[in-house]
Length: 164
Image 1: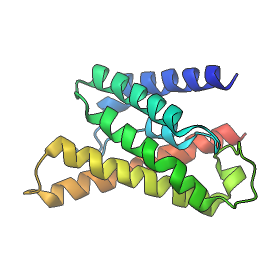
Image 2 (image 1 turned 180 degrees about the vertical axis):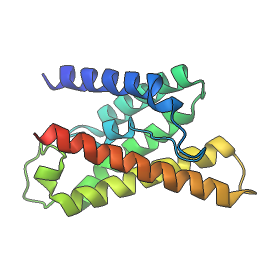
Image 3 (image 1 turned 60 degrees about the vertical axis):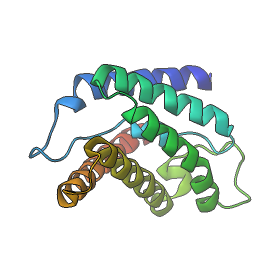
Image 4 (image 1 turned 30 degrees about the horizontal axis):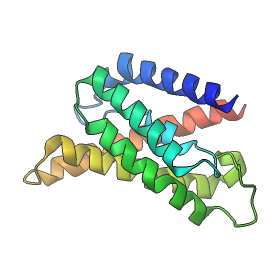
């Protein structure tokens, strides 16, 4: 049942990102990258290889439709690598092994910390690789920061709707 939910979530995020969000460039700076939410939502006991495989697959699909060869796949794979370790750090040891990651289960402050670290890391790496230069580092930081902020706003909006 969880695999069907995971497949449907990845397809929904893929379609929303490719058809809608990739065409939004707020002030020519911020682009929402909502598909990072997919990496955030893996349960606590999910095997690390499965997280890496799912994230790489969604990143590869995003790359195919957005014409960014390897960019999203590489960044999503890195986030998939970080996610279980960060989750173990933030979650109490005595919590359930298959804990669902959400604001309701983690608490708002831990969920916010978790999301901010993952989304900011993703955006910094994504825009650094996209620009592939540090000569214009102000523009790079501005794009990464604004995109991370916009992505976080969308993630919290989706999380609010999911909780109801």
